[in-house]
Image (cartoon, rainbow, N blue to C red; front, side, top):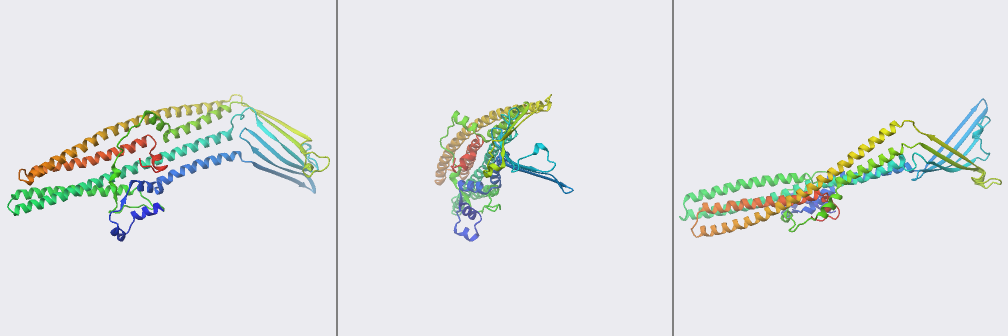
Length: 475
């Protein structure tokens, strides 16, 4: 419902715009739209589905399996044999495979080893590998790697949201800054127009020379050119902001010209400090590192599995057997108490060249991933420190710029008072006013850089997605 209202705001009709000329798009509302409808946000949500599907498929290796075989041979009016073998196999996590089934065989030329009682044969037991596959086998390795892949897809989702929000919030900050600069330019044009009218009136009254009217008019024209540039910048930043806006049906949205930002969205935290422990904690949970760690876990599982293949295959099977009549409580029959079947299998390559080669490759991949993880950890930590340096410098520039705006304002106020009593000239007033306007525009740039530096810090620390996606907290 909230997204629908926001979309209606962005696509409002002319009649509605006439009623609500000052529609405001806040940063929180903008981010909500991005997270709800942006194609990249929806792609990020699919990563979780990929991971769940992979684990679900890997768990299928432990699904019980029903088996059935029926073979019949008749020739020249004689029934040679009729073989029926049905059963159930249940794999377990510990490498033991539980088996059970029923056999009923008959025929004139039946192989003696396939003979069964007249009412069939019931069997139940287990198969286990006590050599290769005792601690890990292909089924368990596949599931472990799928679980690691699921963690990797979750980290990838976080990375995608991190990147998306950094771009979106950066463009939003540029949009707010462009709007604030446009407001300053509009005010400058109004002020220049008012001064030109005053000077022209004074000229007509004989108090000012004609040259003053020309100078005032040139100031007005210069301000108009700056205003046009500010309008162009605001329109272009609005278009860039529209790149992040989509509706529920995945149709792109475009900001209406009358939609404006909230000026306070350019503000940054007044007090900020990030302890070393906070940096370490943020880096430990960084999505990129979590994804690398998940890949490392996959390589570790693969290494363990390849090492397991160096062992000989030694498989044991034991089945208890009983007459099928015991199922119907027939007299003289017992369930699984009349006999057993024991089987032992052994197999081992003599040179193990394939197994040793694959194990070496698995170890090399693990080492390579481990070195990459350490490199990424160092790079991320240094990036976080860079962002902290940026914030400290931009904070100083912002504070200094605010002081300069105050001082330029004082100079202009004093010069305007002197001009009003005839002790100054229009040239001197303009000389005081132009630096004030420039300093105010520069101040907006400093505030935008500082605001974007905070977003960049959260992005490089891997926490930007969490600040907005979990509780929609405004950082």
